[in-house]
Image (cartoon, one colour):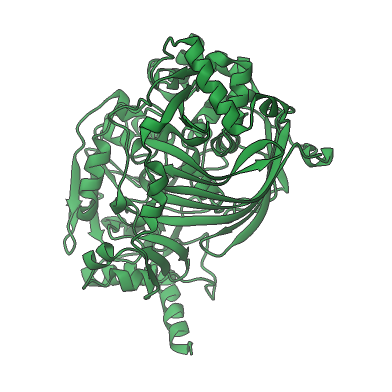
Length: 637
């Protein structure tokens, strides 16, 4: 029953007690008052009789108090389609359908055991089968869920953040779990309207279209769903053809169909508030039927900060006296995040005890801080994790640095599930430049500390962002708080200014919330370049017109001939004689090199495997990749 059910007394003591306030500050580098316990409105004194009346109404809507009490568990077979924002073609717009999953859920509520058997098929067409198992507060993963990293053992401990996400998601999908909690502790419930801060972000249609439905890793061609307005906006440019090769579905009503269930006539509903460690959960209970139509709360997004999180419930069915929704839609910031369609549900099944057996020899170590962070950004991370790209949810203890050339370093976090971003650091005479900080703030905090120690007395002058995708730039805010100016493509300037001006985050406050300073964003216009002067290591930034994102730039450390890019070309430890996969975005990068007459000796990329300290390739090898691609194109039928 999510974290409050797993270790109820311990969890509340840690997250809600005064001792935890200091621990969170120490672990995350922030003040004690910037925690989830101050997140929402405090539980208001409410008329007990009125609260009980609405609780009884909700119990009846779910099948009655007795049926709820007797529900020891359930199993469900469903499909789950996940969408992720912040990874589209242009800054501030576009979703992609990260994964479609076949799911078999086995949940022993009384025994606090959850087994999730998945068959994930991601938008690249890659498929994996994996099991997430949670038994009495310990989590395990069986099978390989990291498609792109090194193969690992068949079973491993589940990251505490991922465990929190799994439990939170089941609680979002099944309000029965919340109501069962109130049977044991009615004081968790109160009445009132849903209360959210003015800074909470809700997005509109412009943030949704286009939606990438499939994606080819070699060509970067997408099958895209969009509306007429977006097509008209880009009419006359090469971007649409480069990105889709003409594979476009036009459906301007898709988002409206998603939005419709969110709109309620509040006169027909009572709002039941459920106490929560992160933020209150608001259940919209129909006054006539007792049916719960919607759950609303708040969680974090790396780019936008506090965002609205909602689940709407549809097509309820009676299953042995208990009502279950057969379709659920989850939205983040009012944009699609998860759609669940259940084909079968069984209440109180006879579970085979073997399915909950813990893997032999696998030891789980719990981390409450990592669990809280996972719960705070659950749907975004799961959207990528289930697509085969697990993201870090622990607390890295240090930064691993590899010196490529004097004054040039590549930085990564020391955790196993690092975000795969190699941050380039360039020392100049009067300051330090960082390129692509990566996904999240804790890693950035450590990198800033490393730079301050490695280059004492030199400020971090600039942080350069190769493109707006969140896995590259989610950790930019601590650099701004440290005084760095942001350098990015002009097309992304307004996007960054808007997001960097939001402070006072509640769910996951970062360094910029603790030290709110105005952001300076320097935009590099298409067709131009920006040079950051230095007598020894000048750095130039060049816009790259490419099919991956409309705001791409490449960074050249001139005297060393190192050209750094994000997602256009990612060299490995060595280049094979016959490259197995040649991305078309490499051609986009080469056009920029040739158009500007750049003197390049090495190609570096933000992405790399953990065993690649430098992640560079000789420019001659890069060109050989392109020649192989051009030859393959000529030979194609």
